[in-house]
Amino acid sequence: INAEYMGGQIQQQTRPREAVKLAGLNHFLERPDWLQVREDVMFKALTAKFSAHPALLDMLLETKDAFLAQHTSDDKYWGDGGDGSGFNKLGHLLMRLRDGLKDLPNE
Image (cartoon, rainbow, N blue to C red; front, side, top):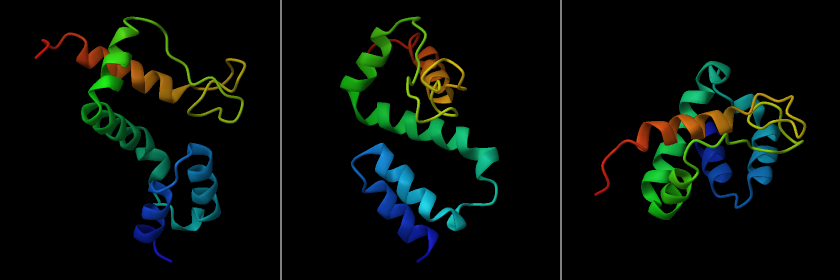
């Protein structure tokens, strides 16, 4: 098993929890600088996702200036920990993406 193969397997998962579980089982394949680059990687992935799916982009822009949170007790890094004690990095990245796009002219 190599990182490229496992990355493909993780991408094929239909549920985020299953992708996380599979990644956790193969943590030895994690790139050494992952903790330093994970937010940049996630931002690029979110940008690609919302660029490829205009309906999702519209939904994101409709949130206007609302605070966005990944409300889950399963994740204190990407989510809010379920009680607000988490870092909510996903919510912050979504707001950053939204803020960067909301002032662009509609085409």
